[in-house]
Length: 403
Image (cartoon, rainbow, N blue to C red; front, side, top):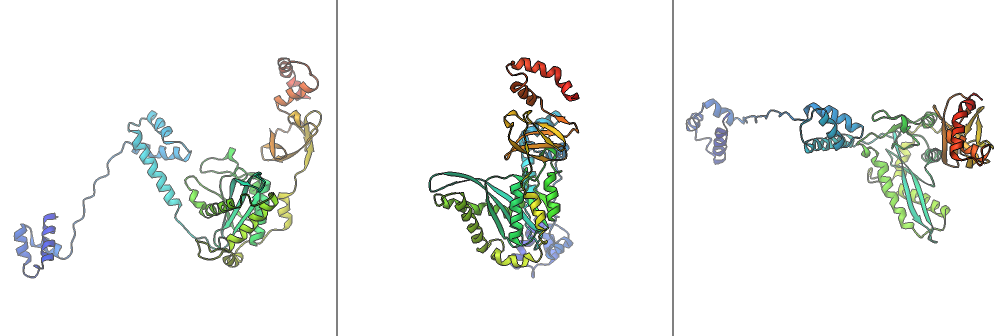
């Protein structure tokens, strides 16, 4: 259709000449068919021509690019890779595509929804918060955070570490504080929750002990996906609130007083009106509690926070665990260590530090070469050089295995 006809009709309508000029007259002036004039007078608007999509040098590589992004590759790494696959475009073309793709993913992930009562909670840590006492002593602490999605009821706890046992302890207390257990809990990919060694992008494997904990307590654990930090928005907001504790620098004597400050802070924020709901969390919790899962038996809680059994390190720098011997560094001779068992490994801890791990083999004797060298240095081959001990170990390790 002709744009000049549309423009002229518009002028005629604005000037009020529609009633005094016939369609035929307008058609003669514009040199077009009267039916064309009629369509425009009845409100017809021509469709804009759609430009045909242009081929991009990226078209054959977009699937590869997105796949590499899911594995955490940088734009430059992807650029170098697809160049070898035949890409002839510029880096800036690739970088623009990557940026737009990430923005689209974030947009999809940040569509806000309000969870129903009892459905979801979010968990995180406020890590390495530095606080200074009245005496100038520096305390580097962590704050455990859990917030219920519907009521915005918050639980915070001061801790000196972020071990798995501490995580279980904090979660147990949070469930008791809320009066029940939500059906699902959202976590960051923290090492006490996720088995990072056996996880892949898009296929996260949960830590064996944590997975069993979630089953025993009754909730479904969910981990954050790549590009989606906003999915934990409620607990991130809580982490920002915790910054208010900085005002208590130089206002406490010791760790116990700081602990009381954190508990009082928790009470305060649950009495404040939440920006997300425009209600006080403590009031909205009354409705949410009805929908939470019941608390498990106290014995279930105790299973995960009980002190682990300790094993004494012998003069041979070994411990006996389930009828098998495992080597540890010689500096631990005479000390007591704890054992944590997974599907594939025996992890040995001294206090809260991992000192060594052994792959499960079924053998009676399980040792690392460096441990044997140290044992021989302090015992049978005391006074020998490192080279002499190395030769001895190489010659006799097979005999040691047979023994």
